[in-house]
Length: 245
Image (cartoon, rainbow, N blue to C red):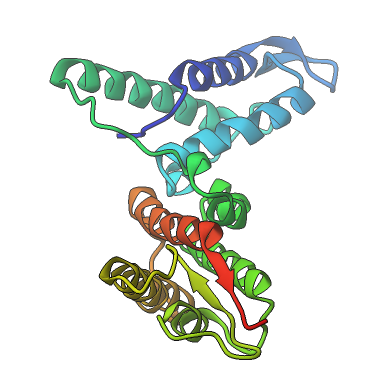
């Protein structure tokens, strides 16, 4: 399933591209009559930027299926075929959803916490999902350092030091996910968020960053990882800082 948030908009963009790349009789620059795309090259190039984003959303490996045109007068033939295929995919997904009643809730990357999405957005939109998740982790680490005013620790050690239930000392403020009333709830929340942060960096960020030659993440799997960092970001963003006076 493509999970396109606005299929009508996507179809409109694909239709525009398909119309522009329809082959028609034209007088070629050489002066002779010939077959060429209906749209002007600059318009087609600009529209291709949009449809390539749609292709990436549907199939991150779409370039492997791109047929290179053998005609210099019709260079966008391969893209046009993929645009037709993309429309068919969107229509099929809509029909499957209607017939099977697949109305499960969906999550949009743009609705995630800004620390996660803003860190990941540019890489995500170009189909670099694994790198996008890593960038989100770096952004959340940096925002946590800024909130605490610390540069001496980062990532796992930063969250371990700032989220334990000990009292703050000079130069080592604490993050309180809930007010410190000494209750079991407070201790449970601190311990749980700290363990969650450890897991995010140990099981997601580190393998994504340090393992060479890993294949690109499927978009849905990368979105799950990004959602985990988004949840961590919400806890940290809403936490209060407790420091020594």
